[in-house]
Image (cartoon, rainbow, N blue to C red):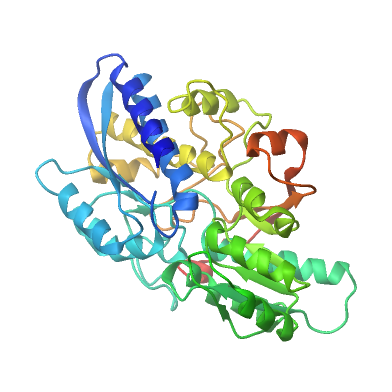
Length: 426
């Protein structure tokens, strides 16, 4: 926790040193630095903090400072609800940078009532229908919910499609077998029905799901069950922390299966922690490049990173980059709102609808083009799939492991899914 505290102090110090700005814009920031998803919540949350500090140090929102109220809620829904109650009090926020699926879904009705755009780290497809009941499977209207990147369901569909193509390319006989693995929790369960329905459509045999907790543990029994099931493709629905435990246990148990990770289920830090057990895991990446990639926007990204790493030596995993994009989309929506009646929740929401195939200024080649409309909050249905490659001992730093090529994230496919209305919202 010392590193987290130092990063926060560094960001605040740089913000304080920024030029004086006009009136402030209040937002809330919900982050998990200590709970069940903290392994990926910390880099994502740090990126939100860094980006807000960078915005304030570079002119704010048309000269207005963003005043962000940070709340580390430990991935506990009651604490998220308490934070929201505070944020709609006397100094009501005009937007929230949120986090998890359970809390984001619990707050949908409240943010709708209060008309507060909610930018989540949850990509649950149930958040993509702003009107409600766009089809028989859409659960709710979510007119103020936004996220950057493909939904969990669309990402899972893309992995099913990749698996079907992989099975065909290898010329294997019979039906491939697909299995969903994860905690019995809103987050890993979010894309389960969508993936299983698509797997059946493409000719898979869908096996009974295998449950394992969101926290690290000994998952040897689950790996033995997986081995006995004869599964060919296994989707890991949890975040990296517990997925690492599964990958290690299954490698020890001699499980021969192609693993997929959800968007939070694998990254460079997880590849280091899991070592060779992470080799070959396929998972979605939201940005056009990874850290250190060649793109014009990399210069901006590095400047933002320096808000909590003045030396510029930190390696930022894929989740950090996605969070930077998320915060900058909010910033540009606020800039439109400021010029069109003022930075309110409603105007900020409307600002999200003003462009199509949109990349925030200065982030060219980093953030993938995204489009939100008043009838469809799926920013994209294009999914970039990467494979983690680990080809040696991983006891060095992530930066050194990536630099030496021991850890690589290799792009294996771009899957363009049809933007069907009947697939929206689930």
